[in-house]
Length: 133
Image (cartoon, rainbow, N blue to C red; front, side, top):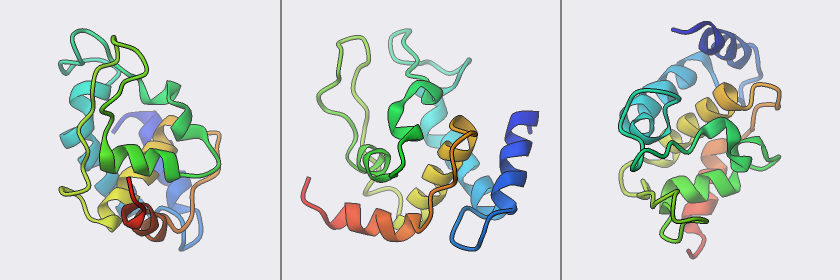
């Protein structure tokens, strides 16, 4: 595990029970590598026609609320901000609320290390899932 990931996992393990656990961090990392890294990895993978939307530059990752990130993870992006960014599939039918919470928690810890951990991610994912898209 890269040093930056190890530090993020240690930070996650040191937070309270509502925040990301070390096991949740590892689950989130595995999901990211399996479902997201092909387009969002800093290197490797295929990207999208040569474009790699980097998670560290995504404002949803550093916002105070996880709702926008969870919404995009569930519903995808069918109207990209620019032609160069491309579309993103939604994962609401692939991941349950706990899996989305672990994935969002990993993304936050890994790509916004200076921001506090989000809390109650599974409950927030359930609320976002229930909201009309």
